[in-house]
Image (cartoon, rainbow, N blue to C red):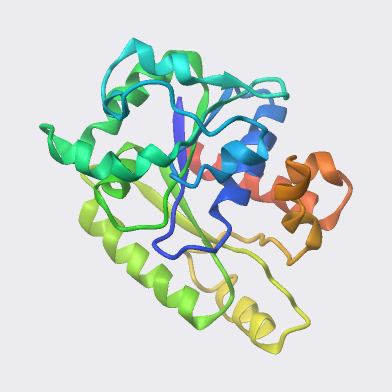
Length: 248
């Protein structure tokens, strides 16, 4: 079983759309997949039509507790389950601080869930916190979505430093460009400068698309909205890249 997390210190870079579409695509390949929505905003849960409600005490997150699995919900798609988000997750860092081995507590929950899944995909909150440290230390691969502008690239550098300082084990990282509009000179220049030269970036990127924006309205993965679109093909390619990296 592998753990793939989408994380960036900066918000608004598309972590949730990456997490939802990658988890959906992984399930389509035959992997029994759990999408764990650890963002208090619970956007991934909303897109997959699951009420953002975590059943029980927040302390179950970070424990080897059989009651944690009672919060898992089946989605409308085969092989794809979700552990929903909840606004109460905003207190998770405080809860973790009160426990021993506070930066590695999430591993206990993941080890309990491990037998039931081939892949766990985590949608992370946009912050540098104890929750983030736990996600880093429980992941086999962390992917940072990046918008092609210099503020987002600066946040990627901060992400790289934070991960290197926080990780207690070998955790691989990568980045992928999102919301790319090649009609914009800056976007085109950055894509040309970084792809193929900066080893942090995978080869494929997600184009700017109104279809991706419509996911929240239509409450579906992009592949269900428009399976033959450029955006759907891009997420399929991203998923293939990430599954290759995580299994290397």
